[in-house]
Picture 1: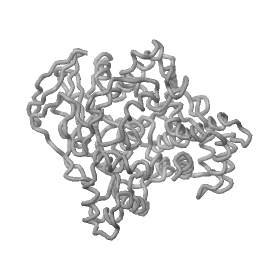
Picture 2: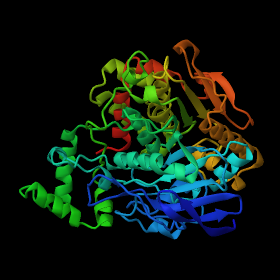
Picture 3: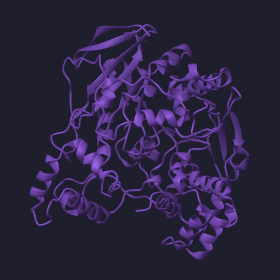
Picture 4: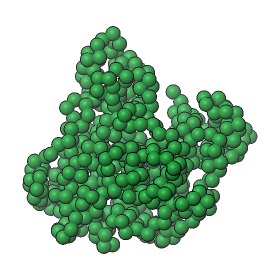
Length: 532
């Protein structure tokens, strides 16, 4: 696609060097939105003066190959930008802005995109997240929007803390704080690009959805609508600092840093380790969760789903929420079980029976509702366990979270069942995790068959209308007896159906959740898939 550089005059940033695309779209890449004074420091909002925004900015430090692996999972590959392999710990807090060219006379709706990747990999420079074609489509359908794509810190560099570190002001959750800063920057500066700071939609996928949805905990509104693709905070709730204390001790041991040193000396030693070494050595041995602090709190999802409780401030300031999942989301997790498929029914049954906190009645219910038997063949058992993983980690959290909006601002639920027919996809003729992004951003439509590409265009156009506040999506529910979902499949218009098995998902999960807390089920999944 032909591009040409140009200068854009911004009232606060000055002369911003951007790139104009032949499709009547302007883009500004790699704009720094915050600075990081030192490792484990909070982000500080930054105002770039006369920035050169013609090149993509660096991603956060992460294991190599993440972009190619995510594309391969859905059966595709793309040309990767050079910057994708050049992470930078202190320059990674940058954002991309893509907008319709010209002046529309009034401020345009804005969406802020936060990528997924398990808070381990991901970047706004990944080519599948290029916003150009989505913005072109918004112009084509008559609902132009402006897109903002954020980077944030990843892995142990984003989360390491302990009780002593937290007492000293280093309380972790830096990815969450980075996302907050990205929204604050957008609210402050997007008007200069023609955007409406009072009409912002927060969009996240997977871990990015978890982060974006967690912003509903804040009292100050950062967006007016929410789109949560395949990810909820229940998937990875913040852990108490006592858990982080144990992780911190393992980190000190890994780098041969004495616990007898003062905290300042330990911090200095940790900061001296090259970021690549820090990330790659720690990821295989420790999983660093979010920390439960005054900023990021733990909320039981049953409390959130109870519409009578005012648990989340965002239920008051967010005007509308959209929750979406893919039919086979769970395979992004269960695929790690493939090397253990031999005898997996026996190992899973044993794990369920011995999992901490689950009563025998609950364990038996898991086995019966998902029909897991000792005499199942390995692949049959694996398929049933995949269903359990999918329902616990993706399907149920979306439904329970949507229930929490009753009697407040409306929420909608989407199920994406469009088939990924690419030969090399991990899920054969299914709808894997992240496939809705191939549909939304339109960057792989040329590789789709005509029917799938048409479905993708309908899906993306409907999301654009939602961002504009012009969608016709029905509210999910006024009562559990009449919950309504929207289905996208190969038919080129969404279908409105009652929640349940007719959606090609399993209503049995809700019978199970009546007996066993979702948080316990999440723990069963994670400790089985990723044993310590």
